[in-house]
Image (cartoon, rainbow, N blue to C red):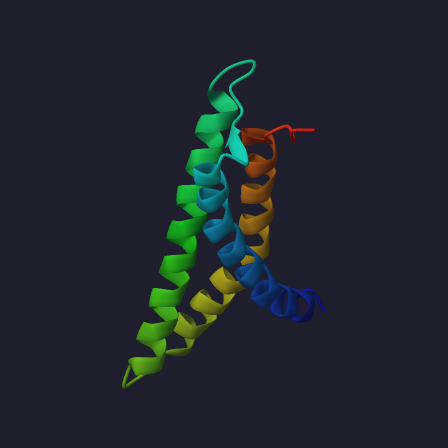
Length: 111
């Protein structure tokens, strides 16, 4: 049962991650979002680490899937390993989102 749930959840989290990876830099450039530096720089640093980690994990999974589709021979343990990493993507996404929540703050809207 957990495999079925995560197998449906993983593609949704991939779509949400791509949206966040595109929207965060755009919002920072527009001035709608900025790094949270209030008590210390740690939340901002962790948000940047989470961003780079999420990009790296997503690129790595895509690269492994492309390799799997173009391979002439496939071993079952390699397919299982990539499938398990794909199913772990929702956990990685939720951890990155939690760092984004604490690492960024929205600009106050002008009245």
